Amino acid sequence: MMSLEKLVRRNIRNMKPYSSARNEFHGTASVFLDANENPWNTTYNRYPDPLQMELKERVSKLKEVETDSIFLGNGSDEAIDLVFRAFCDPGMDSVILIDPSYGMYEVCANLNNVECKKVLLNDKFDLDADKILALDNDWVKVVFLCSPNNPTGNCLNRDEIYKVLDKFHGIVIIDEAYVDFSSQPSFLTELNKFPNLIVLQTLSKAWGAAAIRLGMAFASPEIISVFNKIKYPYNVSKPSQEAALSILSDTEKMQKQLSQILFERSRIEKALTESPYFYKVYPSDANFLLVEVGNANNAYNYLVKKGIVVRNRNNITLCRGCLRITIGTPEENDILLDVMKSLPI
Ligand SMILES: *Cc1c(COP(=O)(O)O)cnc(C)c1O
Image (cartoon, rainbow, N blue to C red; front, side):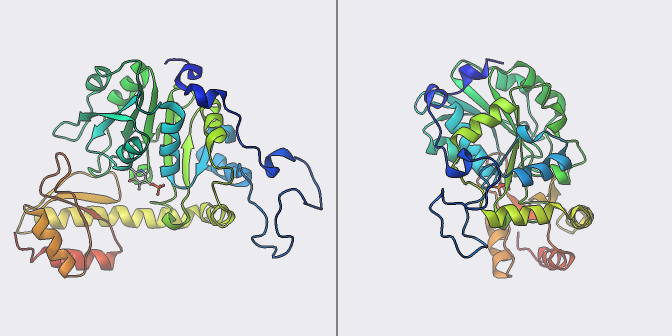
């Protein structure tokens, strides 16, 4: 890995971050006249903890990662954007994306005027590390990997991921938004071995809290302090911090819903594969299935007419004819399977 000092953009390295009232005062006090807040309305009148320490302690216990290796943001999307702002000089640097994958990486790249080099996955939607390493040069700062991948649902080959982590000179992101649904372990345990690794997770999927916008990035304390330097001072609201604390305290509820989703995933997979249409269902380690239905546009419109919305992935690389179907409740899945029986293809 190139030294982090060199990977971080020069203007970011040299800038002084905004220092908020809550940053500058540490200790105990009873009269707070430092932040121009309204002194009444005791629920929301105070600015929230800018570093979300209570929530980080909870995440730390749950994930067995030190608090100084944790960044919390307004969804994983905030962390993705900060990666570009921290490491990629607009109009100069580039990143490597796998194709197909999550659309936000390219949107953030375009937003930041950073070039994307795309590496096609193979016909099993899997990764060839050598194809990524062949593109490595001083201007390629970041590789985005997503495992389990969206929209394909599969985990990427671990040996290939390790090869990228070992040999790529810059930052390697592993987006694990769907890791809770996977039979494969997280890469969180590898943080200490790879100073260039950033693991992304989120409360938006398995934890059932997409509405509160809480994303997590795990990395070396050096990378986390760069994120803390450039983030908005109060990037996670107090209601979100409180909701996250309460949601993360009920692991049992999450585990119960998780096992139901996994049960339903195999039920739908079996029903679609064995239906008279013999749909091709790709193996999934996530809470959705990529299903090849023939004419995906017709199928999509037919499902909408029946009141069911899925994701049409017909125009995505390697996904022609495919719908991405999220696993719903057993009742919702019954409705889907019933309508899929009469799909006009
Ligand atoms: C859903 C999803 C996320 C989650 O993003 P949030 O901003 O945390 O809601 C991240 N990465 C991938 C690949 C996803 O599919």
